[in-house]
Length: 306
Image 1 (cartoon, rainbow, N blue to C red):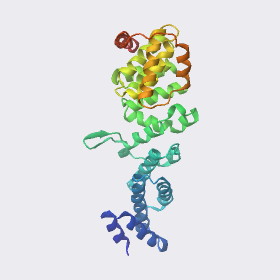
Image 2 (image 1 turned 135 degrees about the vertical axis):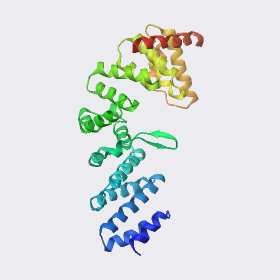
Image 3 (image 1 turned 180 degrees about the horizontal axis):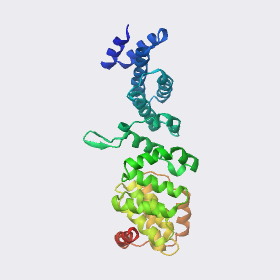
């Protein structure tokens, strides 16, 4: 069998057969065309295994792509792009995947890799932006050394899309991590003037020290979260903020937390049980009384953001 026949098998979608065939050819001869075919057949099989969630095999094939890349012709960066996409796919499959290992490939991205594109009628962030989103997805768990490693890449993403929600949020989180709380607050305020995602209200609330402002923001976090099962943590935050000065409202919020946890079969955290003991003799306000607080919180948040 010749390399061109293996390419034909790929084109017909026979990826496993093509991979086995090119492995035999690659074992006895290595040249530009054989190397190129070996790389792309490996990439085909990687995508298949990743789709099947056969993680161990996918990881092995990604390592093979990395080893093949230096001998693979890649004049316009398609091979580099393939490795980046494969690394992102593994990051979706594997917890704590070492994505930063692929910084040399990320740093080789071309201008074309930083262009958003359309897919299924929707605008999709550029490949470069997707990389940054993955690198910063657990930013709160990172340290300053990690931020230093990815700073240049994030700077480029921010230059390309300064008003992209993810970039503004990452900027706020970075400011917060290095102790620039005022700058982080300003970034969140800018975000919340454009976007109303529930988690943005909650993240800003954590940065503020005024309990009245924190209560207003958590109320809006609940209002803007349409999936009830995700609101429990905000009800608990409100309950703790209120328990000393507004115990009846706190009792209502804690009851809402417990109700949601029970109905969605979610774990109740120990701090909620402690608060339940503190408030056990307190009669909650009515639902309509608490609703007035949520309604007033909208204007209160507008003043915070002004």
